[in-house]
Image (cartoon, rainbow, N blue to C red):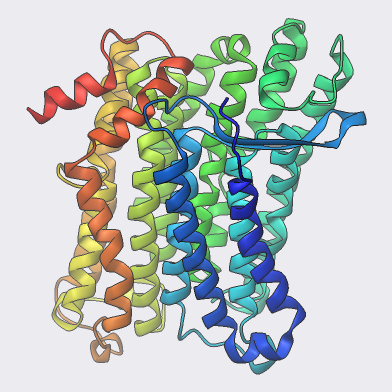
Length: 514
């Protein structure tokens, strides 16, 4: 660990939290300038995160926890205010803080009644604070508190500020809350078991470095029980089949910006937790459960793709594609190959970029046409050519077209999986074939053919919307053609978490590039 001379990570948590508190405490200010203030705060947060990443993080040691700060918080329970990041955590923080300004600008003209004007922007800032805290947490109790607390702004963003009918929004918000709370309570049971069965307890008991040592001394049954409790919470969040059904219901009625943050960042807490907590704290239990989790991951890949192909609601379709993509991530995490592990971590970033664009573009399409039903559309490439072209590019990035962001991570996951289990690799390849169908067929239905009323009168993307999508498309291209820096940063983390591949992911990517 490398200690910080200044509490940079606490500052990153505090800036959006203070912005949300100011807007919440000053209704007049929030109604008049809420969106503008939130955007300024979000941009300041992005600048601070870039400073931390470029100045205060040593990229030559990406697997080490750096910028670490630790202060006793509840020493009687072994809880510390401990924050620290390795390369994966820092990259996820950068993804989160980069998407927040995009979400705020994308939803700039969304309607809010006079009494609630600016409230959605305040909730976005509150959610940003929890996102940063989750990825920066070096104490498992701090992680758990943020894991549960983020449900409050998300519940309000879904139930109060969604796009569906009132009853539909509230039902989706409640389903999301119940699933998430159930997973959190199971995880809490695992934390209690670790405390109860530990042979000794210190005032830093729940810090990652201490807890990993303690967990290794516990009996196999206790380790497995704690591992399962953590995995249930993270499988719900990921989301994996069969605990995935909350996602399409939620995404269908949420604002596009809410879905961007939920699926693009917050659902990655599931895969992040599997890597940072499950593999680190319970490596033996993870090895014992490996093939069961690989099987579930393959089922998620195929089931998510097939379900996506059966949708008429474009927002539900996009959300089901994510179920399939998360299957690839979980497969890469647990197959036991460093190459596949790097692919899974890269996938977390690449998917966050492409799915953000797909949700925003699909939401703008539904807003123009007045419906999410794809059967109501046709020939939109003649009416909204920019929107159509960008939707296709984003879809191709999500299904791993070479040269775009999804190709390298999916290639690494498949190659790493094949090196361990050709059967699992072949099954995952079937998901690649299905993915081509769930992107190209909807494109044909919505954007080709003859235009249909009333969508035939829709306007194409305006300057603000183009400015929102431009950095996402740029990121898709950069991650597709210049993947070596990110692969190099993630490889040491993967090699510390998984074993079994004959070559490094870095060498594989460089060889394929040549």
